[in-house]
Image (cartoon, rainbow, N blue to C red; front, side, top):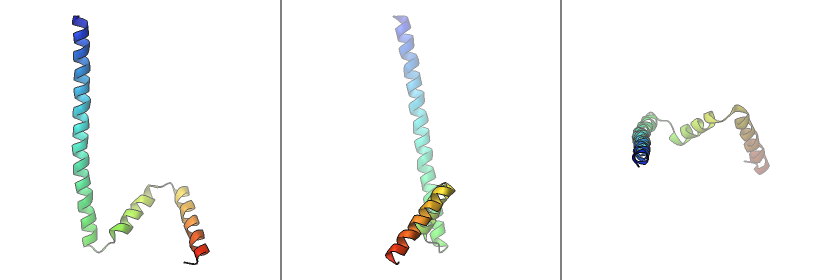
Length: 83
């Protein structure tokens, strides 16, 4: 029985470690989100359109080939609709 108790104790410690790590990361994520909001507010305060800045960031995350394909399709659709 002592062996089962030791195993249970080790599992509990591992679980506690995982939970504490997740909690720390969640705290960091919250802090980073607040920092990002501040940067967007600063960006807006300097006259930039934050919706467009968000689009630029989204596009920069994309692979070049995917972005080009999306641009080509957008242009094709715009010509088709004459806009």
